[in-house]
Image (cartoon, rainbow, N blue to C red; front, side, top):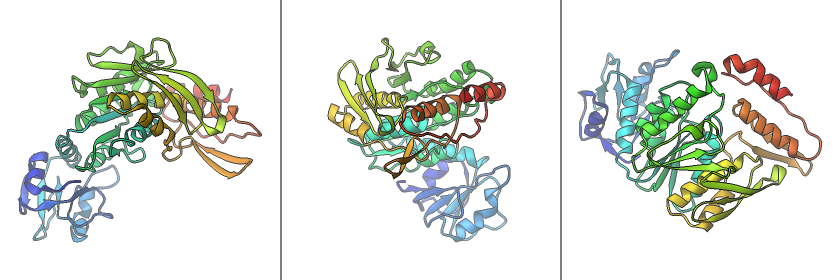
Length: 379
């Protein structure tokens, strides 16, 4: 984070300065009193089982320059600033939105039922060849992780790829109000969180909230093989990526190398890319095609895009191949599970040689689809 003043912070969060020097510098933002560093502002969040306000004194003693608070501490320590706000989570959002607005670099916002993190990592890998790129760490894609990511921006960054998740209507809109994307990506519309949203059509509506904050001259990148996404019509330029003939960014000549990865050709209106994806799974071609389309849109060369795809590394437990010996390998894809992602993992396993065994957990948040979805995976 670039240094800001207490005066700038005060204006960003629309707060009331209870004590402190408006000219004091703030070097970072922290919501965890256990890791707070000197010069940071502590933002105490409130959850079902905790209240960060109970740790304000600890954070200040650890070196925090000051804090935001909805509940004012009994004692205000001298030499520190205290800003009162109605809601600390909303204040964190307001601060992130203000801070993001200080940067004119391209922002890519990614959402979707399945493949958000994979696609975010692939786009960041491609853009990272040419641009110093900020990306969401792991899958910190919610109301806390998104502002924290944005507050990590520095003047050295030349692009940003922000993953945003949801389990209810309104959440993508909320996160998009901070990100204000130049490029909006939806990977697909599946059954994840259908327990809360009721239908795929409602999931589509919730995902499409991403376009409410997309700039008028921005770019939408969609899965062109997704039936529901093909019903979406936007005023902004739209690129549909997939295997179908109608796609603007067309995937062809897919070669499955099993556990060693995928080769394919991606053709745009301008170029033909020969891509080598270093992880298994035919579904990876969608992430690669979207990344190629965005790289091209932002001015990357054919060589840069192909190099970026080849350099892709999975984040966490997503199609992560662990090699024990020449004949013993583990495919770790256990981060999360939904019908679409589970089926994709099993297809990869089925295409690999030798003896195979699958260790499968539950798929949650499927509501009325739970029994049928588990039965179909078993079959």
